[in-house]
Every structure is written in C-alpha cells, then in structure tokens.
Image 1: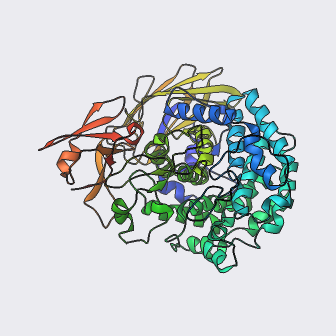
Image 2: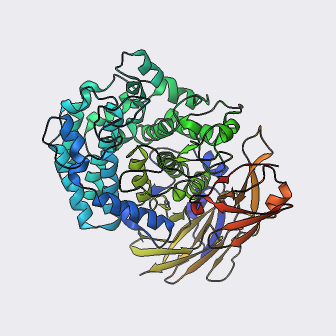
Image 3: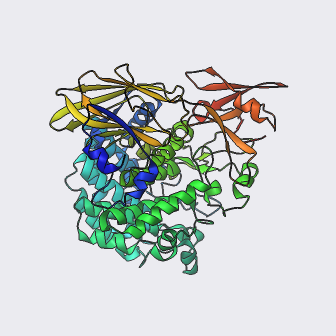
Length: 606
C-alpha cells in the first residue's frame, strides 16, 4: 500500500504494513512531512521509569536556588552576586587548567538547558510554580546581559547556543513575555565574539588561543536553535545567522555525497549538528542538508554498540577498523549518555517526521531502554551520570566534575519522552514508543484520548484503549520493530481482522471507525537473538531480548557458546532478568536499567 492509497483508504477496518522502502521512495518535501509532533501538553507519562525520571529532574531543577543559577552571569559582568557557588564546570574558578583541572571550565554553560527543561516541564504539567520560576530566571538573566560576559570566555558559541534554546523555549512553552527581547540583547552581546563561520576544531587550533579549551567551541551546532528562533518569531536575523553557521564545506556537503567524514570528530557535537542540517531542510527546503542528516545518522549507526550508544571516548572511529572492538578493553567512557541520547532523540525524531520511516523509531527505542533510562539520577551537589561503560569489566560511575554538560541535557531529554512517543499523521495517529502513557488530540472535531497500558519491554504485550466523545474514522499506526518475531499479532476488540498482519520493520495501520471503549491488543514476539559488534567481529556478540541488550553480571566466563546464550531463560518478567546456564554454573543477565553497583559485560566471544 503506498501513501496515496493509505490516505484514501476508508474501509470499516483495513490494515496494512507500510515498508520503510516504500516511504523512502516518496521524495519528502519540507512542505509535506509524513508526521508531525504533538504539543508537550498532549502527552502524559503514566506510572513507569520514564515518568519517574521526568518527575525527579523536574523537581530537582525547580528546587535549585535562582541566585545560584544566575551567579556566574552576575560575577562575570561585575554585578553583585549573592548565593552559593554551584561549583564544578558551572562557577568561575582560577583553578581551571585544561586538561588537568576542569573546575570553572565553562561558567553558566548549562543555564539555558536548565531553563529549557523547566519551560518544557511547564508545557507538560501546567504547574504555575514552574512557569513562575521560568519567568523569574529570564528576568534575572536579562539584568546580566552584557558583552562583558563573553570577554575572555572560552566557549562563546557553546553557551550562547544553550541560552538561545532556553529563551525560545521559555517564550514558546512558558509564555514568557520578554524572552525574545532578551534573546535579542543576548545576541547583540555575543556577536563580537562569534566567528565568521562554523569553524572546525582543527581550524580553531590554527588560531591564537590562550589555552586548549578555546579550540573546543562548537559553532557548527548553532543553526538548529537559530532556525527555531526564526520559526518562533524572533526575527529574520536568526535565519541569516543559522545559514551563516551551517558547516557545509567540511561536513554537510561531503555527508550529502555519502562521504563518511565522521572518523576522529567529537561524537556528540557532530550528531547534534545533524539536527541543524534537518532544520536547514525543514526551513529552507535544502535537499542537500536532508541527505547529509540521513547519511550522517546512518554512518553513526554503522559504528554503534548493541545499546544504540556510540562514540567511545567521545570520538568516532575509522570504518573497518578495530576501534570499536579495542574500546571494549581500553576505555570505560563508551557513550556520553544524557548528551548523546538527547542528540540521538532529536535527529531520529526529525527524520521520523520527515520520512515516516519506522527504523528511526527502532533506533530511538534502543537508545531509550539501553542507555538513558539506566542513567543514575543527578545528585544535589551536581554529581552527574555521564558515560555508559561497555568495557569487558564494566561498571556504572559518575563524572568526577560537578555540573558537567550532561546535567543540562538530562532534564531536556526526560521532558521530551512524551513528544517522542506519538506523532500525528496526515489523517490520524502513530504510536512510536511503547510505555504507560496517555495522548489526547482532536480528530475531525472529536476529542480523542488513547491510553497505553504495558509492561514493555519486559513483556511484548501492550493494550491501547480509545476514549472519544464522537465516533471517528482515522488510521492508527503502530510501529512494528524490525526485530519482531513471526508470532507478533494484533487484535481489535478481542478479534483478528482480515489483513491485520504485522510485519517487522513497518507500521501496522488500522484504518476504521473508532468508538468509545475500543481496544487494541498488540503482542510483539520478543525472541532472543545475538547481535555482533560489527561486520569484522561476527563472533563478538551481545545478547538481545526484543529491544533490550542484556548484560552479564560478574562473575562471568570470557567465552560462551551461541547455544548457551540463545537458550537464556527469563526468570523475572517484571525486571527482564535472564539466566544463562553453563558447565560451570548459571550467569545472570540484566538490562542496563537494573544495574547499580555490579560489574558487568555487554559483549561475549562465542
């Protein structure tokens, strides 16, 4: 079934699986995206680990003292600066000595991200105290805006980018009345300190610099939020700035021609920059940037771990090298988790909306359940989970510095869980992520609510219930992951229907008249399988159960057989714990979300 036929379908109950190849064959245009995001207020997380993470981060940043958050801006502009120092990367310090001591690394760098996450949290909850805090922080920050802040500042693009994000989110989601005018003043203040174009890190090293940290700025990530500022009414100057900082010569143009220029580059910031390419496509209709974003993510996925994580030691590896395999023995810094997951969610969400290809939902789901959902919570002193460890003798640990960059992206991605879960299609709704949640929308004048109940991913069973004040016909699309086994099935009101046959790697589309109380039961066949590290290491494998990577809890042998791994038994359905039986005893395999202080291993030689 092609998209035109799908849109015209009006049977009382019809179902089809729309393949990724069919969707890719439809040349997408900026004017006619396959899907679009819902508002933050339209999706509510129900009782689940996703909701627990969101609520923890919301409460944590809501409770932070405003004077502490604003202090570095006041200090660096010569204003009175009451309040306790935040410390770590966030507060100015004479102790900063790269790369020996990162105390005082980037003063105020995550302020914009904290502001953004609170604005999004208000959009989700409607909590007035959260809105008031957003307004107070914008007002307090406005009083500090001055070129003095950026004088002798090592990463002006890096911090400005986050302030832009915070202010446009305060405007968009928390209805702050002055946020856009404050953004103009901020832009005026930083302009003398911005480069002429998107310098690479290599180019920055060629310029005179007081210390090495000045070469770590990230001008190539600026366009995404500058484009968004333009789209949200901040003015045409932001459109011009966005185009100015597109890193076309060395990054997007080669990527668009299918040239892999990722090896050796800083991992998170270059994945983050792919979202700038997508905004160039969405705003300017640039097919070159669309091709760059799509090819860039594909190159990232080609060197990703079974968890969906990438970038050991924050660096992309050379293709067809032993870089990824060597990382299992040589580093514990395998994936920059909150930052990487946030960047990964953004680019997969953009591409999913533009193409409708469900493989981007599969990729998002893998990162969700195997990386960020297992991150330890931020501590009161700013101690933050940063790296996921996939070493052969791995463990969970916090970053040694307080308030690092991942303390900013962590609350942003947890606020984005809802808008990543459901999307509006041209005529209906698509369900992308499976977790307890509720989504509400208008369908041809009717108020529709879909409530999702599930123990996924410990179980493959999900129930979707429809509530509506008027019967309405529309297609409901369910993402069927590429790993789903042949026993995957769906029922509507307890019955199968002709053509209701889910196929892996497609959308299962049910186009019918929906009535109040209708019920869809989806059962995904979650078979165990072995996923090789890469093509050059076919016998170095991770054990997978559905979307979940399972980690062997120590003590564990160096080698296992294929049969032993595939015969793993699920012993605790609620936690998704498994047992692998060997000649020397049983080995427990846990998902990343269950691991606390245990040592573990992801990959096994078979």
